[in-house]
Amino acid sequence: MTSARRTEGLKTSTRQLDGGVVVFEAVGEVDISTADDLREPLVDLAGGIAAGGVLVTDLTGIGFFSSPGIEALLIADKRVRAAGGRLRVVTSPVVRRALVAVGLRQALDMRDALDDALRG
Image (tube, rainbow, N blue to C red; front, side):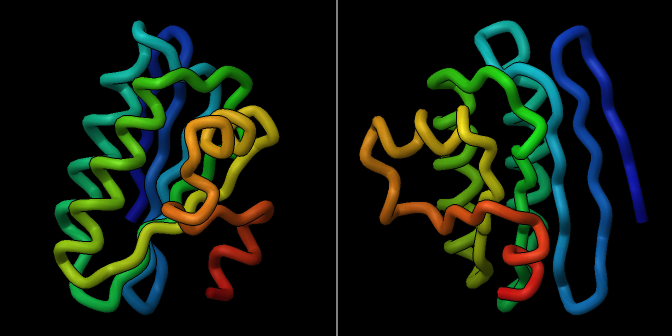
């Protein structure tokens, strides 16, 4: 299953893979005007991850990432963990800098490449 959503500054898509893996991809900029376009589908997906499932959030196409994006990731991570699943975040350099700057290096499972996140 694949779905897509596009707004002025952010495009998102979702695809379901075998083995309880869901890949959520966002491309564009995450700021106050696009925060809901990231948070709503991401948090909805996180709530649907089953025990043992994985939500891979591919943010390699993000060129600007502000605090509403960080908040969305933290909410999604909390929901996935509560269900017994795992969140993996594939970062662009911009996203990685933002997450490290606020002290989330150890709190989130950050990966540099989608292949790495899919392998586990």
